Structure formats: structure tokens, C-alpha cells
Image (cartoon, rainbow, N blue to C red; front, side, top):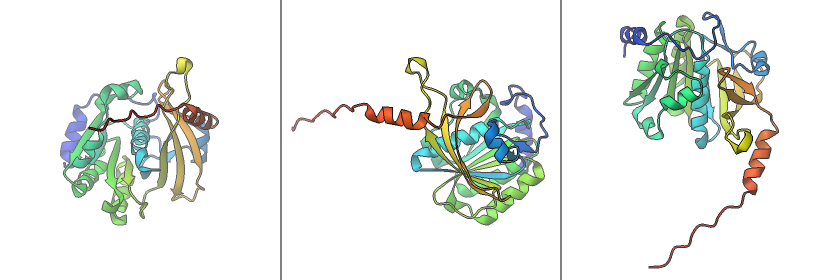
Length: 258
């Protein structure tokens, strides 16, 4: 996928239904929308930069992907969101259009690209990040397949083009030229009336900041009406977890011997 094709694809996408309320498209920061978190980051993440997200555990890969996609949706820069992943990642599922719409996102803005292997993902990703018609690029990769040189190339390309680049990494933490490194875990949602499921909640930890900012942890939930993250009540997660643990489990039915 070269830059000319990417630009042509971007021109075909509707420029409607931005995932963020109207804002300055040339803003240098990409905020979470949670004032306390954005203040600690100096207004948010650097928009024209590379950022990486690691799942806290294997079961948190979906949560990390959700945070990446929701952050991409908050990018006021016009253009599509391009998500690149290897073919084998398709076995873990893919974004569901109606589900995205329920979160306040516009599915028409997302381009999902599958490549045969990690090398193809990185090559296509480099072209996408260098394309000024793109808003955000998400690369779903394995840490062992991405070295420091590859992240430097992505970081430099993002700085030149202004394209926000999010690296979804799995496996062991590896050296990187990313501006920030985050660890993401799923968190219990606060219950709504009638025990209805609450908004998606995430536990985030800033592991590294190239600017030298100290790391911190926060509990955020997604507000679909504001298309923004909000600080979650830290008392909810332990309470919900304890309540779920107190629910007795039904014993598994015994199998009769043949």
C-alpha cells in the first residue's frame, strides 16, 4: 500500500461524523478528555508522535485495542483511522460497526488493513504514517517483530506528517522510540440502575515518557455522549469485584460414566 493509494482512499471517505466535538484540527496535543490526566500530560499526548500501548495481561489485549481506537477517535485531525494488523490477528475478532456506533464512533472513518506478516504490517504502516491525508494509524504488532530502528522510523515519520501513530504491542516490553508507553488493563464498570452494564472502564499506567514526566496510574471510563474519557470512581472497581466474587458459582454438572 503506497502513499498515492492511501491518499486516494482517504479522499473517498466521508468527511462527516468526526469522533470528537469540533475542535482545532491543528492542535498539537491529543487529550484523553479527563482533565486530571490531561493536566499531568501537559494538555494531553503529543499528536504528531508515536505512542505505544501494552496489555497488562494476555486477557487485556482487547482493552488495549479499545483504548487505542477511542484515542484515535478523539483526534480532531481530519482523515481516516487506519488500523493495520497481521492476518493471524483476525482470529481474535475485529471491530464491529454497530458496536463502534454505540460508543459514539463513526465506523465509516475506520479502514482495517490485514497484511500477511509483521514485515508487511510495518511496511504498510510506514506508508500510512507518512501520508498527510491520514489522521491516525494504529499498528497491531508483536514486540519481538519490532526493533528500535523500526520505532525510530515510525516516530520520525509521525513528526514529519503530523499523523498520530499508536503501536499496539504484545509480548515483553522492548526498547522503543515512542513518546509514551502505556500499560492497559480492563476494569470493572460501575453498575447502572437495574444492574445494567455501565460504561467501559480501563486501568491505565504511564510506564515511560520521553519528556521525563513521572509515571502514574489512573482509572478511566468512556463517556460516549462527550466522546471522551472521564475519571472513574476508584472505589467502584474493588466494590464491583468483591460483589462479583461473592456470587456463588453453580457446580459443574457431573458426567455419567459410559
